Image (cartoon, rainbow, N blue to C red; front, top):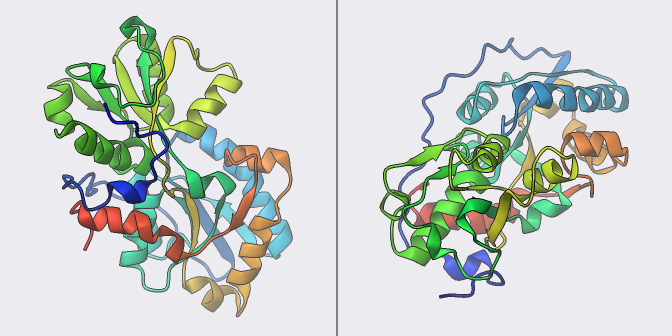
Length: 302
């Protein structure tokens, strides 16, 4: 077995091809056209959309107060829908995952990453398994998962699909279909993955570590029943991306002010809503070069 827990993502680059994941045929949810008076923002629906709306509304209120403009949170139907809404200029600020962020940078010249969570520069995925498998956490990839019922998250998720699949291919020499067999699934969201594995509907799955830790802390998930059995090497992931129309719409320097406002947030309620209790830090497009390299070498991007 290969000890992978301490190895950075860069050591896995240039190693394996990866089938394109989640090209995205979803249509964007109906979104009102962007107004010169309204800053509309959204986030990829990586968890229950009803809960996300409740968590993001306080952020909208805070940004409106600090920036002196009307701010609206607009839910979207899926990961590709968030990219489409941003491309169309209907959304001018979005909380993207690493992969959707890369897609958006490529599609929208001038799109800028302006902030990310402190944890997002060293993000990782948990491979979780139902206790019935009898597996314990270890540094080596759990080859015992071969042939088991397995669920990823969303097909366009960085932490719930892209990077887990990348490491599966590298460490097993097989595609997920070949390694797990016919009963491979996409749950659509990290919290759904956790609950499906906890219920035993699927033997194992891959999910965002921050969502898992939060669910356990909040008593929404039994850590013994849905066990962490392997942790991937670190990679960059979630980020706030600003549309180039922001300064055009709200005036020169607005994007910089927005970045300062996000990074300055200390309210634990607002940070908890973003599942980033440690706070946000400035970030830039170049921070995602390593992830972009992985995506290009995996055949996902040009």
